[in-house]
Structures are given as structure tokens and as C-alpha cells.
Amino acid sequence: MARKKVPMPLELDITLFRLGRPGISKVLGNLEAEVMELIWARPVEDGTTVRDIFEILYPQRHLAYTTVMTTMTRLAKKQLLQVEKREQTYIYTPTLTRQAFISHLINRVLEDLLVSFVETAPPELDTRSDHDASTHFQKLLDEITRRRAMEAGQSCT
Image (cartoon, rainbow, N blue to C red; front, side, top):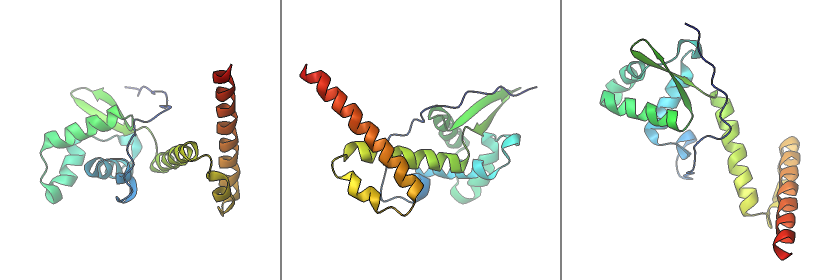
């Protein structure tokens, strides 16, 4: 049976950022982050079942099968996993590679910071060692500034 390709989500449902946590658990719960790391470590073409992840996690964490199932369902709702039913089994595959997820996350956090702190951002951009990233974020900042100026002009009329 051929797999249906789902269009790439434009926006992942990620709304929290916890500074004190390591890695991707900054934006996901600890168990969600662990499950995603396990799924990314597996061959994508095989897909992953709840049982696959449960069998890896149970010896270390003694989680209930339903806890793993609920976690993977939550990751699908956040659009990090897509689900396909094959006979009686649900097969999960990541919607993004680990690297693509991290890139998306970095861009989203930086964009949010630029929007939130637009007045203080320009000097900080010049100190970045990555010229391409600096140029990208300067263009983004210019676009944000232009949009704010247009909105201010519209609200004054």
C-alpha cells in the first residue's frame, strides 16, 4: 500500500520555550523530546509504532503503554509526527528531520526575539559571526520595521 504524502506543515504547534532545559526539551516536554529523539534515530521509511518506542523506554522508565501512546498522539497534534493506519496498527513518521526541526525552531525563536525587541536588536546583529545569518536577520528586521511603520501610518489616518 502506497503511503499518502501529507503537505509539510507551515507552522508547528510549539508555544513554550524553557531556557533552563537542555536540547529540544526547551520546547517539548521531557518525554516528548525523548520520544522524538528515538523516532529520529530510526529509519524513516520503516515508520515507528507505539510498541517500538514503548519497548525501548520501558526498561529505563517503566512507563505505561498508554502513556507512550498519548505522548505520540500529542506529538502528532503538534504536527511533529504524521500518522498512518496500516491494518490494525498506527505508524508514525516525523514530519521534519531533526535538523529541519532545529532550524525551524531557531528561526522561530530569533524572529520572535527580533519582533519583541526590535529597538535594541540592530547592534546585536552586527556581532554575529555568521554573516549569512546576520544578513538574513537584518532583512527580517527591516521587514518587521517596514510593517510596523505601515501599521502606524494606517492607525494614524
